[in-house]
Length: 285
Image 1 (spheres, rainbow, N blue to C red):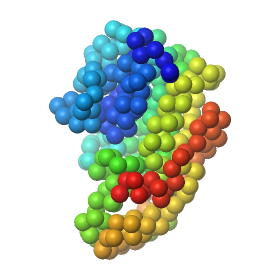
Image 2 (cartoon, one colour):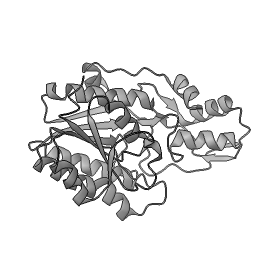
Image 3 (cartoon, rainbow, N blue to C red):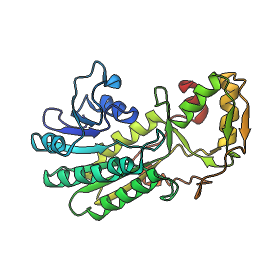
């Protein structure tokens, strides 16, 4: 067992999100799982799961941390800005709220704060900027709490949000919609979500053996595929009649053209991805 469920608790932010919900279900066999979520009216991803879930607020953070022994905080909640969130909303969710949670975790002697991060350049979007800024705060406070930072490549899988790039493209291809795209030369690393769950679980199991007060792990598949090749494969796999208009959309400022991921630190812990891109896409479609 990873831990004694009766003695240790894991607090997951964004517990009804795609990643948070799958982590909660994966860890519930070994821990008591509690969660924070911005909207708790419809916890559709947590059906048939008996988790204590509170609205994400400073008071509820303190309530969950002060009234039980929390071994780990896993921060997965995020706003990407894909649903037209304003910059103050993005900063509040990705920087201010996790900073308050980090502070509360330190005061309540949490063993480790596990942060979900991005490999994107800080200036490519408000999302990337706020994620980079919080990573720096996690590093800055490393002498007060162990910080474990998980820099994720683009993950995907069945049930991902409709704003997820691969999920969105599959849906549009199935509807045979014309799709405007960049030239598609960007080389990306797409990782199937189950491999990410394995990485989180392994890091938690090995946290006591990680000597660094701040450990950064980049998580990817190790495979590169251009956006153009990906879209052409998806079109063929879905049997779509969509017209793909490559070059119709300009690249973003500071666009990441080659996503380089150093997975050696994670491999040294004993992790390796199990799904290649074709297998993962087939399962998702």
